[in-house]
Length: 280
Image 1 (cartoon, helix red, strand yellow):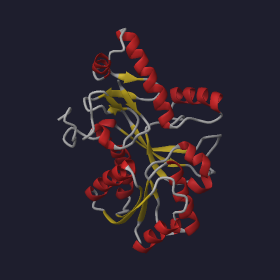
Image 2 (image 1 turned 90 degrees about the horizontal axis):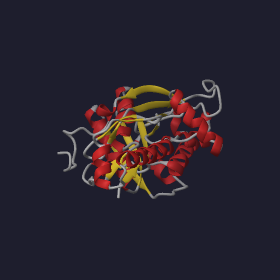
Image 3 (image 1 turned 90 degrees about the vertical axis):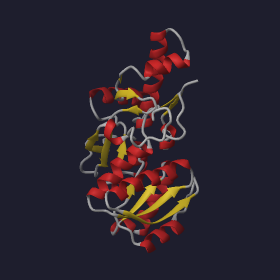
Image 4 (image 1 turned 135 degrees about the horizontal axis):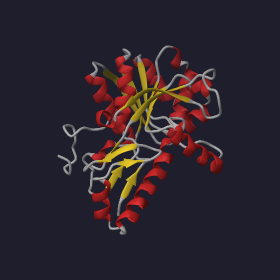
């Protein structure tokens, strides 16, 4: 059976845990790290303290970010792990403050990320440190509001307001749900439709034939344009984004702006770096 992975972020899926029937479709921790951490290191933020979720995603995000940070001349001066579903981050933030980093790096997602950022605001940490949220979704921004989230840098695979095609999909999604889609939700729709079109073209649901087709055919739709490699990585552009301030937002859900477009062959794991035996 094919496994089309969109929500999972750990880069292990296309490295040591790769297999012949997985396509890692949306994003991964390597791309996020090279986008957000890479940009901040170039701005001179070299000393990092990580607040990471205690499971595979958090560990991979911290590890991949540190690879980028170290390569840029930076270092990690401390880190702490927290359980998934943490509501009170005060004890962790006290440790972060004591280390006096330039950057507290938030290596988690969803409600954990929102709660961590809210706590950072309450502690006033953002007044003298630059906060890096390594994974952020447009729904997170909506929940926090531009007053709290404005200025945050993050990396994503897609946004509803990128171009005419993305806006058309976003509006269709909004008409059914009352909100704009995240990049993962767009990738869910894209990957399912790509698979169904593959089955229709081949006139079979045989997984080996489907994978052979998907890894030898250029993929293109409203979500992305690119190709799937032997390690299962769907290679496409990624985007370094910045959350807008309230003054910069001109319509509902107009929350982010593109800082840089990053080609997939530069931002995802390269063949020289891969730990996937299928691609070595």
